[in-house]
Length: 524
Image 1: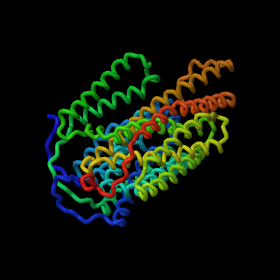
Image 2: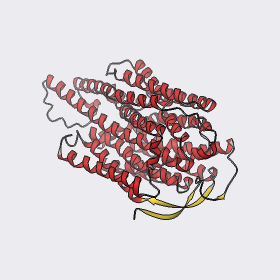
Image 3: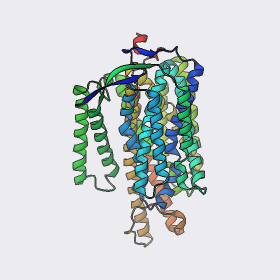
Image 4: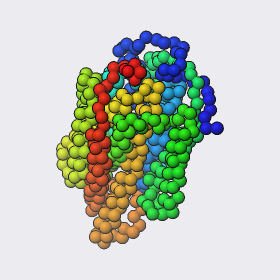
């Protein structure tokens, strides 16, 4: 059986009779509920940023390698990516409030596991559990907001989401750096989000009240399993190819066809078999949804793939402490904060959004290109300027891609549509982190071995492990710093073409003024 019929609670279905139909929420009620949602979003973003500056210390302490460094990041992205569309579809079928709270609990369990991890393998497993919760929070916050306010007003509230994202991004590295340098050590960074998760859970319990509708639904277990399996196989292949085995190896010959066949089967099930598919393929008939989804993949690939290694650059190429590396993120996040709030308010006031989306992508391309020029000797002032440009572009891009899709989607499909954008952005991020991480590791290793050979030192024993720079002789340390600096610039250059393709997708999107009603039927 592909589908199992159950009776579910849904807050959005236009076809069922509401058990309780309250009046539209006032601005105060929306803000009270939004405070809990923003806390949840803060928790999701903090899980990535707070550990960023701890990664070099973690990998050194647990005797990991550059591959392990990459996998601590990829594990969360992989789990988040594979489950995002599942969470989104569940939001169209069950209580959104209960789902958000469940995601918070799962995230908290993963955090505790990470705090107690005795090895890199256990830590990576804990990050997978965290990713399951983060996938729910990333998808569901957008869905709940879409249930409460119309697209025209949503731009205003999307600005708050951007602000929460920026706050988590700027405070995470700072808090993480301070905690790593404190007696708590790197393990303390995984406990930072727990108080915020508890607070978000309690606020949502008290303040989030959505209309409840009961309707019969069918859960597409087969489609969900095939989708998660296919995505996971391909992402694992991308993450390991070039490091654990060669791109042209038998592992590649096995994993790529298996992943492709699983995804093809998932598409077949979603299109012709499932009565209520996890990812409704009809959504892609809409030009805006298709182009915004493609742009999200490319933005995720360029943004996550390049920026995740900035902290390692500041510590490994510039000799900064985790706290100092966290301070360096202020300019990028400041640009993101200003851009997301300002564009959100302007879009709500005018109902027009494409010009800001295009302008944001132009800035992303420019910022990536400028960061592609850095090395171990580039002025920190100029690096800060380059990061600010990138932040301004990202602030005007990420939330508005979701908004454009939601504006063209019926309320009954809002969960699936919102999660599709987040899903493909996460896929891009996972691929970007893996591929660009492999590029970084390869370039650093090659440059270090060549430099050691020039010094007359045998570098054949080089294992790819990230060294403790303070313990290295001055000439060898300078070699490592130079290698990391130059390789980081190349990573950003490699991301530029993907950002340019995302700009092309955005240019091709047809602008539809934001509607002032919650559903397409009401607008018609």
